Image (cartoon, rainbow, N blue to C red; front, side, top):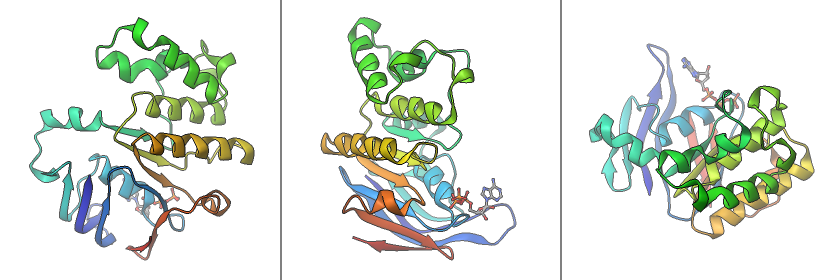
Length: 219
Ligand SMILES: Nc1ncnc2c1ncn2[C@@H]1O[C@H](COP(=O)(O)OP(=O)(O)OP(=O)(O)O)[C@@H](O)[C@H]1O
């Protein structure tokens, strides 16, 4: 689905922070991406989302060389990728319900066809009471759950989540992990960037470990 070959990344004239990354995110796979703070997890997720270009190497996404994609082709590819960023990126002028429904609205779906699914998912992540609230009044953990619901609502081919349980307590973190695993069972490839060893220990899953600019893979 997404393949990296000898990918390297540097910011501006700085040192190469990621080197010789060669790996694949396969269809319907489930993996954690981990490594110390500053190891480059967020940078790697941004390259997977085609939001950041590598300084060398090849990224192939859905069979296409990412460097040859036209700007106009990017939105269609990105729509197949669900992302949960560390800063959530919710729209403050929309309610929780509207934020979560946004990917479906952008795709031109009629509200009648998705209202039930959006409401059910919002309840599932424990935000039933916050359906009509603006993100401005949500706590960090509530925003995180709204961002997760928005990333999942359109059943993406791949989900990229950056510390998706960083702002919630352990029981809720376990519940969110179950939600990611359920999504994976229904066909979505999942990449979860996390420092949380207790979370990773709950599942037998592939681990991509970044350190000193390089990637070690434990299948
Ligand atoms: N926009 C940028 N410009 C310059 N350097 C950057 C930029 N973004 C990240 N870096 C640097 O790249 C390195 C990797 O950062 P990144 O945020 O990818 O790591 P991380 O593993 O996600 O860290 P954390 O776990 O703390 O979120 C760090 O040294 C960081 O300072």
